[in-house]
Amino acid sequence: MVDQILSAYAGREEQLFSELEARYGPAKKSSTPAASTPKSPKPRVAKSQTAGDYFGQDNPVIREITQRVQRIYSEKMRPIEETYMYDKFYETLMNDVDFEAKPMVLLIGQYSVGKTSFIRYLLECDYQGMRVGPEPTTDKFISVMYGDTERVIPGNAAAVSADLPFNSLQQFGSGFLNRFEVVQVPSPVLRSITFIDTPGVLSGEKQRLNRTYDFAEVIHYFADRADRILILFDAHKLDISDEMKAAIEALHGNDDKIRVVLNKADSVEKQQLMRIYGALMWSLGRVIKNPEVTRVYLGSFWDQPLRYDYFKDLFAVEQMDLFADLRGLPGNCLLRKINDLVRRARVSKAHALLLSYLRKQIPKMFGKQKKQQELLDQMPEIFQMIQTEYRLPPSDFPNLDRFLQVVANMDFSTFPKYKPELFDALDEVLAHDIPEVMNMLPKPQQGEEDENPQAENPFAEVELEKGVATWRITQAHKQECDNVFATLKQNNGKASGSAVKAVLMKSDLEMNDLRKIWELADIDADGKMDAGEFAVAMWLVNEKMAGKPLPDVLPEDLIPPSKRSTHVF
Image (cartoon, rainbow, N blue to C red; front, side):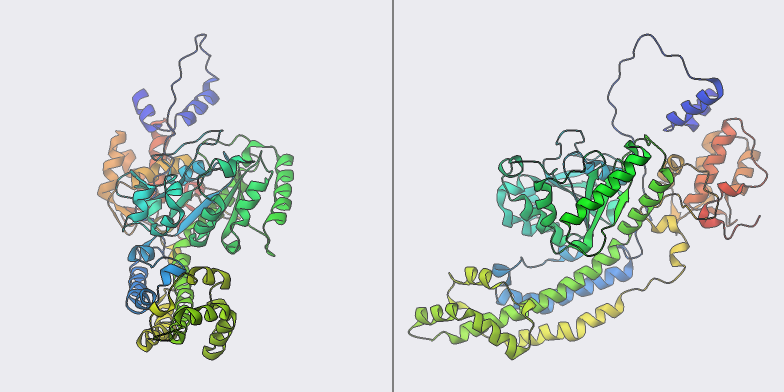
């Protein structure tokens, strides 16, 4: 019996101890202290293997659209970029891996605010290169992304890899690449999202002198390419230093991507939390120049129990809101890529017109240098003339000073001539191809996301519905059951009766008890179980193994919230 109880509570020893203390009183402490050995945190959750979001890259419609966008760029846009040397003036040319890249979440904050712990909290596992502590620990930019096997790729190798979207990082040189690495982790969450962990913002001259690269420039680079930017604050360290302010200002132009996380909010009492929240909002208003209020999420994003649980329900709802925001990134990512493609096409057209015009003005024989200097001096007027002649907005043109800096040392006579076929292809992209792609985008139908929320949501947690009894299944139990459920063979998010039977039989309960547990847990009576029903079945198994009787009718607070509307009492 003891072995059965220990097996049933495997991974939930704290819950077992608390229940034993409630029943028999606290255990007496030994007079001889036991030697403690550090133990790596236990993984909190293994996400379901069916965790691809509706708009995720694994969706066949999205995959088809992505491939269509790749063809549009490679066949109609890349030729004009290569011909008119787009990469020498702007950004690097794009490869297929840039289109296939998962949405990116950038985390920034001062040291020891919990950036790395936040990633570990979502992945529910440790990963190579992870360092957590009260001192400045993360000293590199780390891209945490999906891989079939766990491995670390150094920055210099990652920047030249054709399989990774980091080729353009070479512009920052080896000083930065030596402080950058890619960590691949076989976590289901990373099938839909990639995290960029950053070094903590230091104070004083350490921020500038101790780093061999421009921190603000690198932050700006990743911010432009990120789909979501999370700024983390510690409830005990709200001051925004000048260095932190500079890092936030480096996010300029990406204000719509910013979300703020007030981490470790469980470590302060009620009144203190309200004061801290107000102080944070006041401080943010001075730094983030955005007319709209920035969303601030409250919570404690690590694998330890809450210190003060006054606001545990609030923290649960805030966590669900944050996870829902991250869940929607795959769909937004595709839209962002299409939007960037349109922007790139417009800039490419203006750039190609500029270079072809400059080439046309250079004489074939004599006076090339003199004419080139005249054109450099007249560059503002040339910009204005091309804008007027081709009816192009000024925003499509490069920064004048930056353009002059690059073009001054080039020979205008080597620029390519005007090639109408390339411009026709680019106009075709803007006039026809992009609108067709936009019409291909899937539109979520009402009710589709409700069919199997656990299968669709990589950040699924216990639902909290207003006016409905909360679920008795604890978060810890649900996470452990998800761990097991993810290993079962599934079809549309459900495991067959034979697959679940093999797990239930390990409890060594009587067949009559297992039959009753199945009848209670198989709420929709389809002979299969989804993740919620499986969690209920395992809860009933644990209750029976602890000596408690099985109910004749499944109590309402044991029914998964998503099943309550269809359950017949």
